[in-house]
Image (cartoon, rainbow, N blue to C red):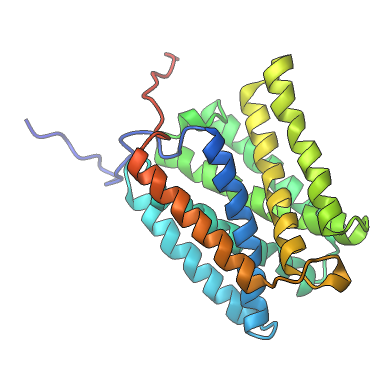
Length: 265
């Protein structure tokens, strides 16, 4: 018997559209944050700080990845991580543009993205009653999820620049700071029963400035506390690592969420 097609024509997901949270998830997440930072900075330098051209390229990469991810009806590692990387690139460019073109200081952009992120969380929870990544089984929830991811990447970029430039910690000092901070939700969840959803998003936000600070430390000139390996080299190395790890996940398929029944409401 043929199934009725919803009048909206929307093809809802058949299963969760995001991966299970494993150790490898965090490793790839850190590399995507580092790679996104380096690639966005490389594009800006490649086009001699013509941020309009770099922005168009970043937006195009984001659009292609977005279409790919939303054309799938279940989690596909390559599609998911392509969009995560595209958001890392585009989110970096967007946050940098607010500072470099619009002229908002790093403290201002950091505050702005905190407000944006809090607003997304509030609307998401008000609409769906949960912020759990295990609930991403509808298109609407997936839209909330990726909007949150974008805001976390933009916030992380602004926050990392704030600690490096305004607080004068430099890139390595900032990386160490965020490495310490990211241990807070990990230890609090493990030993003090911190809410798992809160701990996840706490750690997720901090991975961005952590990865980006390490990327800047490796790539930027020595006179601004970097090691001077260059954006191109850091982009290439991190991208190769991401491709290799995502290829492994595509074969192993050990990051697919188990089917969970939602409680009756």
